[in-house]
Length: 178
Image (cartoon, rainbow, N blue to C red):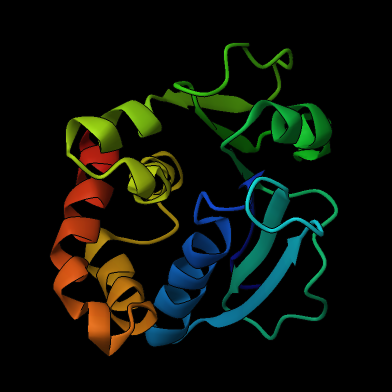
């Protein structure tokens, strides 16, 4: 039986939630994994809620729906409230602690608090907290390497914005090493 990792990313529209999911999914695909990417957002887009289900597996993915993720990345408090209890026991929750002022109440999961928005602002890229938190997720889970995620960043970045690949990777590294 191969390894499967189910990842849910959740936050406000405009935080790059769906793009983050696309980067992770493409990275899996470019590294010969079976993947699924299922975006979901509220009616408002920017400012509304957004979440994304990503499955990275060694075997074909049967369903794109994730009910109990192995990994939860949350970038706003309403998402933590909504999805905290859905994470599998033994799973990982990664929190943007710049924006979320409360601690996880469960003791059967690993929690990583990352000042993702603050780190992004300190690097003059306030809209790229999503890249910082991807780096923290890679470090906490080992689901893929920095070299593997770089393939996803390159594939997900439109040609007109190719110059942003290095800055995205810099922020992913900051989250990974932070």
